[in-house]
Image (tube, rainbow, N blue to C red):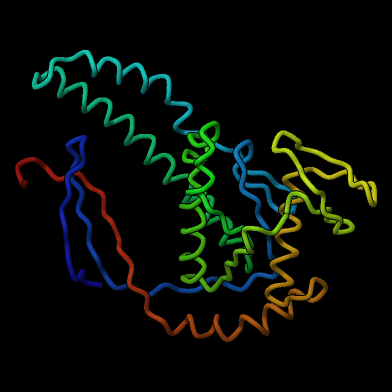
Length: 262
């Protein structure tokens, strides 16, 4: 459809982008019988209740050494000189590469989760509070959990899925998924533990993902043995209504504009 507005922006690396706002129909995806609980981490970006782990790319960490060197070179350049301006753009390109790589990765991961699952359950994280831990702050910001959750939320509305976040204070890591025994404390360094009640050996992250899934099932009132029928009954009305909704989305056509046009 024809765009209703158009804006041109310029980045710090002297690239021009055209952003066109247009109205489009978004078709909901075919129903799926699968539901999943996900636990977000630093060693593995996502650990799912089905046992699969998605690696953490650590885009900033991988470019940190190079970025540090180039920033030192920038600090040595004379202010107002052409060499300083050239070096500033070079540092900006590194930041741009990191940001674009992270954004591309998050979109691919979130779309894969949406495509494969009808119900996605995650924790409600207070990222601003978590980055107060100065030892982990850089890694948490590099992981960009908040952006992933944001993408899952709006994409689930677009494509007729259900995205639910359990309470952030639920002890998903300290609860044994086998017998529901809750530990008094569990250090972050402890990655595996044995339940003192039922003696079940638990992998910290996978156990948390299972507990997140089960908590979501309970909150949504979906029975574990009849997930397929429950989803059809509870989500069918929302899914059918989504077919009639026209969503307005921003389509950013990122093409560099020739200098002669600017």
